[in-house]
Length: 511
Ligand SMILES: [Ca+2]
Image (cartoon, rainbow, N blue to C red; front, side, top):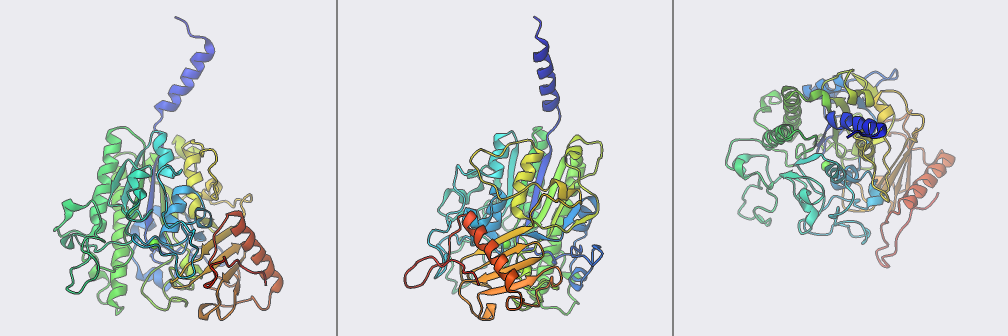
């Protein structure tokens, strides 16, 4: 039988696509890691060269340095100010104002806050929602979840990541923090005679085989991640590994493997323990990179490394230059220290001849200063894997392809909207909006953190550490930025804090 020429050429094209292994994707997400919690300098000097600050001398992250040498790191990469909003933005490609999980998800009680919106999305992701792993799974990927989930409350289905598109779930549940990092404590909160918390309610799920062992949580998760990667390779399936470290979230349990490095520092025991969590997380990254090399798949594996919100380092006041110095503020606050996170993108082994790397070239040892955000991963990953975004699914993210080459992307608007209509946290009821060189912060209920005003305005280009509030002296810029903030919230159909007495929404006001 002779096939028509067209059929033959289609067949040839199909077999060349199917014969080529598809790229593997690793997203390593570190809980509560800010952009300064590392020995790898992200911030730059006036010439755009990486500049080291004292915190870069304090932390030890040689494997982040190793990954950064292979790829590009971003110094203006933004996340939401707390956990679940960022995690769901990674899963959906949407800003939190749109998906409406604008606060961390308390597993057991709706934590909208006293004047929070009743119709915020405490329930998180629902089965059937469009998610990054779900789309990859439907297109032939092995989808692996290792670590912290925090996508939905305890009684809801999506508390289990296997309900939202992951083939495999290790250790993911509704909890936002481990009860303990110690295997000897079964990764559960230590028993206390007067404890109100039920034993087991904050234990990391699914790691029973490590219970009673002298093993740190970060190490157990690393062993699991490596094993599931090996299985995917054995089955010749491309994989998506979402490796969501519980580290470096509180409790600040000291990792004994690294404690001696900090013992004579003179810093507080908490600060030392935090540094050991950072170093253990970094070792995990190194072990995973070694594993990709050993399996011979590094050149076909794209690695994204990032944090989920600003630093939670126990180093000082929440609204000052301390925990994320020289940036101001920390996790949960309205300053840059609350929402600037490390971001590194690299092929695990550079190979200029590799067809995937030709499709998505990444500059080695480069720094990108243009602003980008957590929801940009979704379209970037689908673009690389040639999978279309499902129809009807609205994206806020944009592809990072040009930025990964370290060139500027002139098509991209440098805007970032961060909406937190909740309390209590380090800052309550606020929205921030970055537009190019400027940033405005709107406080729905002015108080001490806002200097008694609704507005704070900073010129980030000349004042990156937010020391000079220009709201009073630059009314034209303030108005323009507030117009952008309001338009952004309306375009994303955001929900707002409410008046105490009437429960009516309180929308931001123009100055
Ligand atoms: Ca977090």
